[in-house]
Length: 443
Image (cartoon, rainbow, N blue to C red; front, side, top):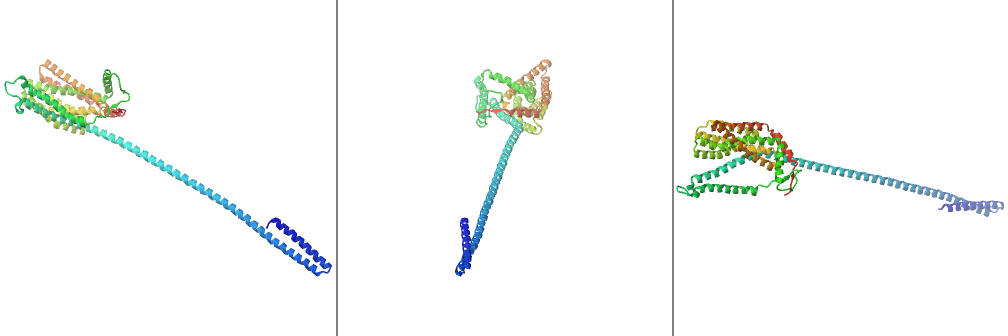
């Protein structure tokens, strides 16, 4: 019930109560019982209406209170729901943050794992390259010795064949006997030269077809172009200057030039010395073949020795043997002695030269090997000048070839002294460091 209606009912009830009381008093005065009863009845009705209005008011108040409480409850529920929603949003936000943090951590861990794996792979690759290069350095002595050994066999076979058809041309259907023309007499020798050319061509084919060309490299300060007539001389000067920068390689090259002068002298003057002592041509030819075929296994042997004690020390062994050969040559008297000395030369000739080559190769950076080995070849050829010169001077001074063969020891001793100054590990480290700065040039 509306508050205004309740107020109107209260006023009407009060008026009805006053009217009833007035009627009751008027009936009592006038002794009108019906009027008195009517007044009392109206008063009773007015009282009942007031009571009913009071009950309604109480009910309305209680309803209003209930509505107020319900509204408060709804507000409290709304606040609680808002708080719950806020907590839920905060929890969801925290969960998202945790998930994002976990994702970032997982990504960072994966990235670190990937970087570590990449680093490990790079380190493994570097170690593999280092192991490969170390294996190459370990193998270079054996390969160089094997090259000389196979060269001895190949050269010995062809030489034996050439000597056979020169000395016994009738075995091969070539002109033989007396009354031959000059052309017919020289035919076996000319065929020997031709066979050498064919031999070179045939055995070069596998090299050209199977062996890959190493990648072209260029140092940071090198530039392309330039005058083709000027650049080669500039490069030669630069190469010589660069070679001097590799002190150990330069010392090795100097030592090689000295002791190889003695080796070349023995090779070149042995036949002349033998002829002077009256050694027959057949013995000289046989000695040449002995050198070829005895040198084959001993070249391999020197490669095995170098693997155990190092190329430098193996070369020292060869130089000691060469010095002993010079001393024995001084006392040589017969053809048997000459053959024995030829066999001794065969034991060290290929191995010493092969290990000299491989030792020098280990002291220079691979990208410079073409240039530096050019100088190596020049020094090797240049070395054949002073030994024969000393040989001739000794003969002219003393009048004896025996003294001349003994003088060759000077080259072996001086070469060994210079070789002893070569620090192999230091030179190899310098070569590896220099090779790290090169730039590969695309073909």
